[in-house]
Amino acid sequence: MKFTEYLKYLLIGLVFGFVLIKSEVVSWFRIQEMFRFDSIHMYGIIGLAIIVGIISVQIIKRKNLKDVDGKAITIPPKDASQVTRYILGGSIFGLGWALLGACPGPMFALLGSGLTIMVIPILAALLGTYTYGILRPKLPH
Amino acid sequence: MTACNFGNVEFFNYDWKSVGKWNFTFLFGSVLGGFLGGYVFTNPEPIQLAASTISDLQALGIQDFSGLVPDDLFAWNALGSVTGLIVLIVGGFLVGFGARYAGGCTSGHAISGLSDLQLASLLAVIGFFIGGLLMTYLIYPFILS
Image 1 (cartoon, rainbow over the protein chains, first blue to last red):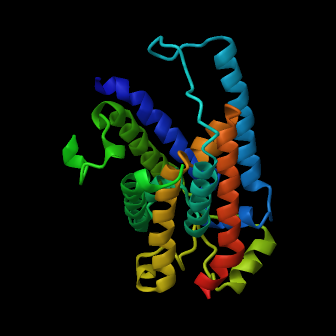
Image 2 (image 1 turned 90 degrees about the vertical axis):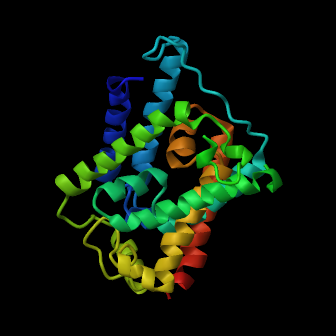
């Protein structure tokens, strides 16, 4: 793939990071506020994103839209019968999300905003991912 | 390929060069976006937080409300305190481990998964709130005190 083909990924990432900062969803304070149910801020942003997403996915599916390479867009379904994985794994993620006040995307956007200390949670998250890779065969899913 | 897979863990045995390049480009883009939004066009005003959240956090000892994150926890010297270590290292570890275990994070499950009306993503989001509420109401007060 040539550089110009990567440009679209770079630009979409740039918009993603910019919006994460400007909507303040990267803020530890906003996460604290959300889990206290003190403001509609986070629920409004995530809720609106889901509404836009539902409409987009429906348009993609009903019109059989193709991606930029002309291939059909398919969204592989997740296996909802793996209840343990989603509830337990989700709860572990939730503990970390409330503690750190940032999920994976915001960690990198905050790093870009000049918060160099974010390299520490980023490295810790990579270690967490690696640990999951090692423990995966032994964990209930 | 295996040079990046210490210990040859099966979960990481995929062709990261073909799958990973656009991911890395996107990730680099989001760092640039953070730079533009949070450094170049930075908002000088403090966040308009709910008054009840501010008083709750002040009671827990948070003093800096000037930026996107409190300086009390997100500065290099925070690594010198047990609280800072727990927030930055344990927090980061749980986010990384949990996101992989649950097969997705906030954007993956809460936004993209729910947009596709996936039951699995609803279960994961319920999990996010079980963990988040436990941390906020039961565990965080101990960590900050």
